[in-house]
Length: 232
Image (cartoon, rainbow, N blue to C red; front, top):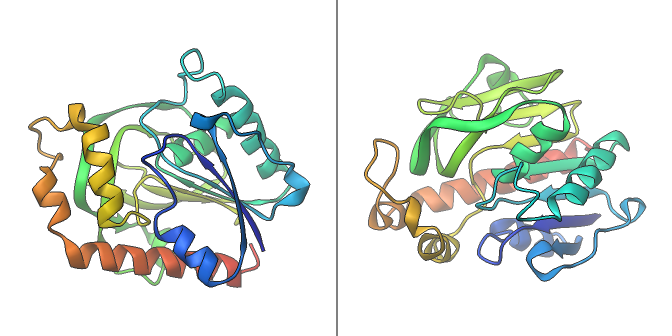
């Protein structure tokens, strides 16, 4: 299978998704926008994975590549490709599907539980998870649910944490892919966001959760396997 990823900054890579893809011997290619890599030819890929980043979906003036990136995501959805968006990636998917993306009431940074909706509990994608499950967050924005999408998960601080659209397009506001080295790299690059707040943890709180990283990565691998098994 041919997987292409969009990476927005050097310090937010694929994490355990790359480990899974290489172990399963999938072809993996990427566009690293911070290095001015070209966009892919969509006919040459099966999956598109859109990663996170500190920019917002409306920051085209500062990051001009956001505009062609959005058009590429839009075409991939229209062409029936599987598209997985994580954090900023989920916001970009919501944006191209016509939903509003805007600052959330709270920034959510660190380990906080999500809760599956009724649809999420019945979902073939997330239904294997406990109803409440600790995941890693690093976001200040949120999005309205796109028209036609199914709401899969929420958290205390953020209502729309996960959705699926036409069974081939998945948006996850949270991170299951990050490993401790990934978060160790993320912390100094986004340290200005680590202010005192109900839903913001300290670096030591984030990095001390060894078993949470393991469980999150296992969940990410299971989601990827289910996407693959569903033929998405």
